[in-house]
Length: 245
Length: 130
Image (cartoon, rainbow over all chains, first blue to last red; front, side, top):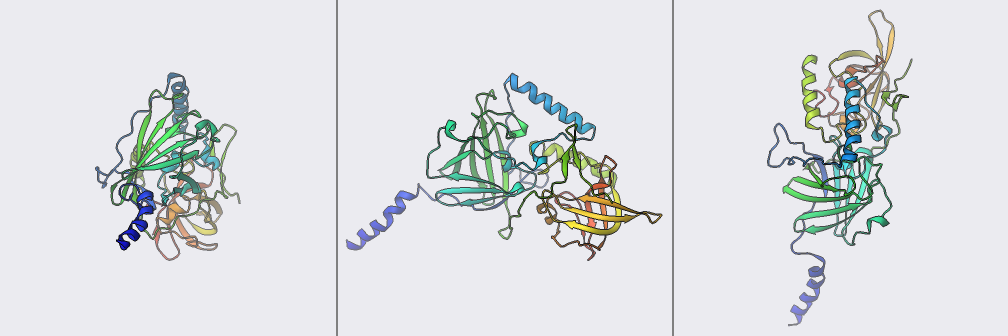
């Protein structure tokens, strides 16, 4: 009788702090898993839904994309913020070229570090989201999350409109991003990203980034832009500074 | 891989990666990815920096006149995946570089592969040789 009471006391805090079943541990370094040749199609990211911008936003967006394509045909790249070493922010930082992201998971917080530009985002699991109008617009906004079974659901608001969006799409301060992190295999993670913006989008757009777990010996590389030799000329074209001798 | 066969592969990659930035910092556009040049010379500086690493190299031409080239690599994280380290090259090292030159005609380019002083041939990250 007495010992079972002690057991009850010991187990009670556990019962309150843990939801049904333990969530999977996503802690580790995750490399971008592009799929394609040699990849398992079952584990690759499913195709994205179409990007449906409202007409007043679609036109300038298409004009910019056409200008970029024309410049590329001339062998030139139009300036964008990353050329000035301004980081990407959410959600683009989740899928930069071949740069991994590191996930550090605790009971109260999930921290995600992107290797490119050493970007950091924090997902709070122990508090509610704020009214988006009270969140200072920034590159990472404010993210809160919860476990829906074995899926980590993350809600992000407060991304500054000047932060380039998915595929360079425009967005308003009312953009809301919902991510669902889910292991599709023991070493393959999907981040399904849904962007909703009632000002800019006809309907939400959803795309998925797939990751493969990197060897646990991998150490993240720092990325501080102290030697940026690319510059933007007077015509808005990206150039490389070479050393003259 | 022969130089003339590289272009279709890069087009394929660009198509495949279209939804994501292909490089962290800028595209390949300023470099002529259809053309490769081999530079044999002496390293004057090796910069293991972000957003890119650089090899500064003096290259004597056939007449013996020295031309200076600035060669860009990925950010350190990228060439590291091809076996580079921060001290893979140093001032005074003799090296052979295969590069894609700048379209502008300036003496600069993007590294494809390098022969290090220890004889190892290393690329410039995933998909960039060897």
